[in-house]
Amino acid sequence: RIRNLGDFGHFVSYMSQPKFQLETFRAWAGKSSDISYYLNSHHIDFHVWAMQGRAKPISVLGVAATGVAKKMGIPAEDTITLTVQWLNLKSKNIGTAVYTASWVAGQADVHSQQRFFYMGHKGEVKIDQAHRGYTTAGDEKGSFASVNPLYMKYTKGADGHFGGRHGYGYRSFEAFVVEAQALNQGSRKTAELDASMPTANTTMQVTAILEAGRRSLDEKRQMTITYDENDEPCGFK
Image (cartoon, rainbow, N blue to C red):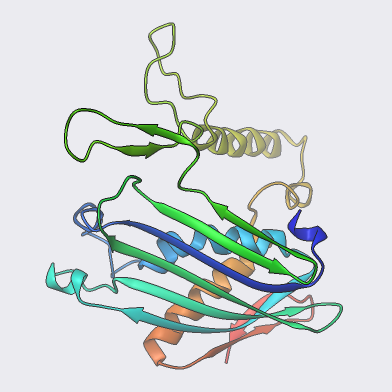
């Protein structure tokens, strides 16, 4: 539906996880990756996919909040926001996007807050991905939770074995394995997968945004994404 809303105008996303996750990620947090690469990548990937062939990111400015992770002895930002300018390819109109990710949130009714808003020239879309309409509660204080059974079924199936095969968390891995097998057998070509799978071709802009955001934070300036003769990201300036 997003692709039927005319030129891209504005996109805002937010994704977070509770701060106790930092202990789980202590070995690599702020060293081999940051919170933007870890969580912003989800909404950026979706946005790039939706804009494929229609708009491209041209500049990135990163800002960050600090304090909680450093107090825990982890050399990482708490929250990272990337402000990105997009160019609509046909009209040359400019769109803006703001992607925010954090791993210092408090414990809430969901493990991960996830939401985004999209505005096109002919309409808008607003989605709360964290609340799917399923809730559970018990007698214990703090037991209320908004659960997402569509992602994964953690209880056993009727046969007593793993029952999560129909959740999209499992099916995403399954789709990758099936397509990889088809490629190895020669029944599929990589170019055929660009429309349905996160191939290297379709995720280059995702990587460009994330890397530009990291460099923007490190160099304390806005980064411009440069493109080659095939209109693929090839560097920064």
